Length: 176
Image 1: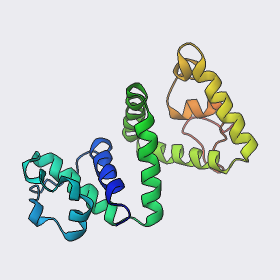
Image 2: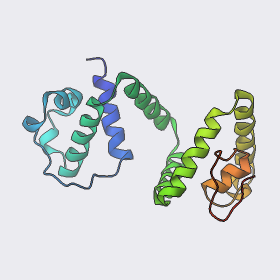
Image 3: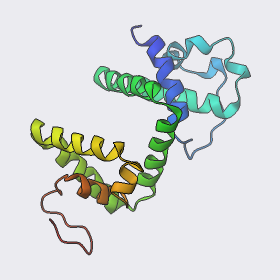
């Protein structure tokens, strides 16, 4: 199977990146895993039954998600994993903080942030390059982008010049 080793790496990354699911089923023994999960988790076969229950639950769930992905989704997941591995511990911590900040937003605010991100992705390459250069310039300053563009995600996007999603307005703010 082409994805066996990367699948294990992805499953382990999912262990680190994903929160435990709400449903707490008993952790499966190796013999209780389906054939596809066993194929993904094969490198852990000998030690599987001695792993902590919570870790087995998360790994089996990760293997199940992996098996449900299309080849394109698997490729994107592997790319994200490789980028994650290249980050320093400080960079990982900052990303985890930002992820927690995003997840703590009310749903409407998360949707506005997603829409702004999509607006950024739709910008012409030259405009995206300008936003990226502005971000790198601010990040290099003392105190980083947090000091140069205080506030939450929306305020930082405004500071970087990312256009607002068309037809949407933030509560209490007019579009620029």
